[in-house]
Structure formats: C-alpha cells, structure tokens
Image 1 (cartoon, rainbow, N blue to C red):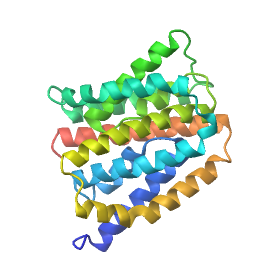
Image 2 (cartoon, rainbow, N blue to C red):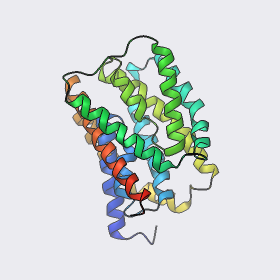
Image 3 (cartoon, one colour):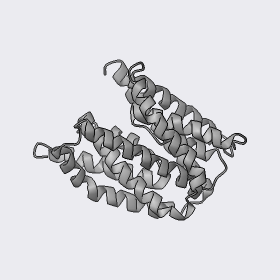
Length: 253
C-alpha cells in the first residue's frame, strides 16, 4: 500500500465508485467497469481479487434488498448450473486463450444490445424454460471460471424471460454471488489474497459504499422500460470495452 501513489489511489477510488454505481443500477458489469479503470494503476492479480471481493459485497447487498422477490425454485437451475460450469471453465483455459473468449463475448454483447436497442421490445423466450435456465447457468459458470465474467449471460437471459426488473435481478444477482464466492475461495487457495490486496480493499470501501448508495437511489426512480434501456446500454458499453481491450492485448498493444 505504501508504494501506491496518490494518482493510483484516485484511480482505485474512481473505478470502485463507477463499478459500484453501475452494478447497483443495472445489476451487473462490476468487473468490466472496474477493470477498464483499475488496470491503469493496479496489476492484474490485485484487480482480479478486488473485482471478486467488491462484487461479492455489492451483489450480496442487492440480494438482501431484493429478498422479497427471491424465488428458490426459479433460482436453483441457474445456481446449480453455475457450480457445475465453473470447473469446466477452468479446464477450458487449457485449450482456449482467455482473451479470445473475452473478444467473442464482447462482440456478442455489442450485437445483442445494439439489435435490441433498435427494437421496441425484448424477445420473450418460451418453452423448455427450466432446462434452458440450467444450460445458461452452466455456460455462466464456465465463462466465470475462464474469464471472471460470470453474471453476464444470466443477465441477458433473464431480460428475455418476460420477468419484471426485480424478478430478473432476484435471479442473476444471487447466481453471481454464488459464482463470486466460489471464485474467491479459489483465489485464496492460489495465494492471490495478500496483505497488500487487503489494504487496497479497505481503502476502496468508502467509494464502494457511495457508488452503491447512489445506484440504488436512482434505481428506485426508474420504470420497467427505463431499466430495460439501462441494461442494454450497459451491455453495449461493456461489450465495446471488452472487445477493444481484448483485441489490443491480442495484438500486443
């Protein structure tokens, strides 16, 4: 912590505030928002730990806020699938480069969000719902294990199920909590959680609290149509950042 400059500390606080705000407002994208800012000052291992630790707090608080909308039967396929998918994602790293996966997901997010922003309404998925929910859960766990982007696919899928904004978030945010909890246990076992990382974590907590408070305050003032647009815009921007950073790293810039 002693070697962290004032500029680096400011970047840590800015990234933490922005990511907490967006996640509290839209329900996801903490890692993509934070990493786009933090990696200008923090190393990848510090960034990974902080993303998982902070996202676990923000998502856990969201689950408590939305506890009245929780539906255990609806949630089980997503959570069970994610638990199964995480080890598969870790194994996937042996054959596929993480940056290639991130680039593909970035392009997918851009295409999905741009298409749906141009339409008056979101498509509604019918038939084979619980089976499909479980498959999305497995894919979410695999993506989270391979790239740390767990939570994006359930957010997209839930937006296509015809559920209200609270019902959507009461599914994909608890799923994210489970994914992040398992991931942080894995990080602890790998020795990534160090004293310096914990000091950085403590330093960013005020910004995390401020961003979370403001995001939830604005969330209470938006309607269903406004929430849909916010989700799609966040997906679009996230996809752009993800694709750009992945492409830049792939070509060595």
